Length: 261
Image (cartoon, rainbow, N blue to C red):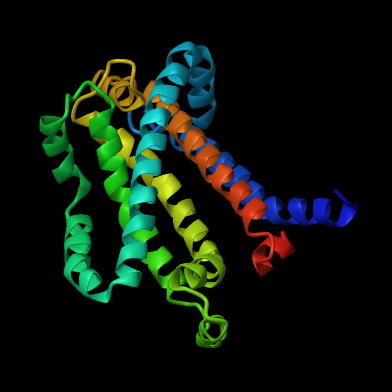
């Protein structure tokens, strides 16, 4: 890596890091100055202290929930790509299926959680994966479909003039055009998957799951521990998001955003 890309990375990450430090500092200062009770809002220093002292409980719980989120992310994103391909290729099927897809995602996720818990064993991770998959499905499907339909007509006509099949046009024109749209959706889905897994665990889950741990700590007024669990969830969500960003820069090297970064 040359000096210029390194400077670009620093410039890219410096503003959010500065804002994050300012927010944490303001949070700590206001809680101390206003004497806010711990059960209302713990100090960041207290949260970090609990985060460290209870790491042997929080990180295994976080890893358990992260695997649920990752499974739901893979299932929902894969189903979204397949659905976008079918809808883009067969318009009649798309007109029939799109209202169903939209209606399913219009339902609040907390309404699905008890239903999936009844369909699957609420202690097993399958119900949480299903909830995460539902959240991930529509953003991936809509963005992928938009990308597949964004291929330039001249490119498609040129391929057809070379007697290319629809499969060749899909592979060489439509898929490369859709990749930036797909990765944009995957970045959104990576965050939604963690939300879905944790929300699902609020309605039942293994005792070593992160959502169950946060809910239990909140019920017994251990709010510093609950906030430490939220911190673990945030870090894992950022890790999954960052993995998608790295994959985007490796796969979509030719896009303007990849070249800038």
